[in-house]
Length: 104
Image 1: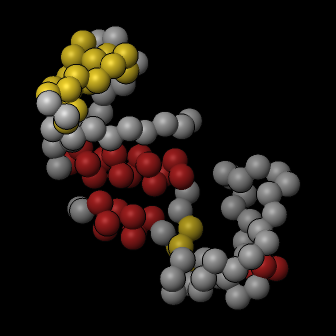
Image 2: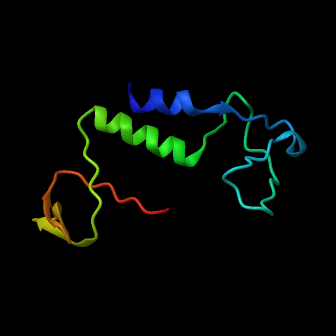
């Protein structure tokens, strides 16, 4: 399954005709979050659960050959002006592309 297909399968229409009609995502937004403006319509916006979306995207990427490596990045290796690797507490990882992701 492609990454865009995974994203589409996890999305649900978000009713945005009025702030009062927008359902509060009960299990991932903190108390006191207020919805104060229209973002679009149910045809142009969707809502996903962050943890489920992230896990599904990772599984889809792994199915295409990606590898998840958890390590502390300590530096970057350069070849000319391009990054060619990542130095980590687990060793050096040679690469031709880097994804920098942060968060819980």
